[in-house]
Length: 202
Image (cartoon, rainbow, N blue to C red; front, side, top):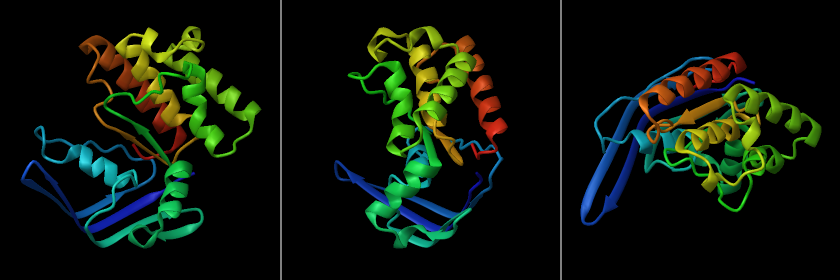
């Protein structure tokens, strides 16, 4: 599955503690199979842009925000909350800076959750789980809760969860911020390789 995103004249405004923050995106195109990096100083809006691409945050203004998939064209600003949730659940994988794992679920159930929410078959999901867990080196931790893992192991679990349902677009917000340099390099290499093999945009 591939997806393309086209953003034109995007404006996001956030206000906090009497401070006003504006993020403007004049033009951005994201194509299936390509790998993009967003660089900038802390607080410049990198996470905000990822939230917009992940359909978790609606822009205040959008000249054009279109997603193209096998079903055709979707005009994102015109979609209802339910429509956004359907697109997000089907096409997006998101590795959060904090990992975002649910402490009351095992590693196995955390990873399987996006696929189950999409109604995917158990046998298909279990095969994908086995493959992802093996590639990411977390197979022996599937029965544990996230709080019993190291920072690097939790990030590997978060990556597996983001990939389990075969998303067309994978977003990662500083996915190795909580791990040491050596582990960060290893995790990034495996992550990028797995996404590229799938044909998704990263």
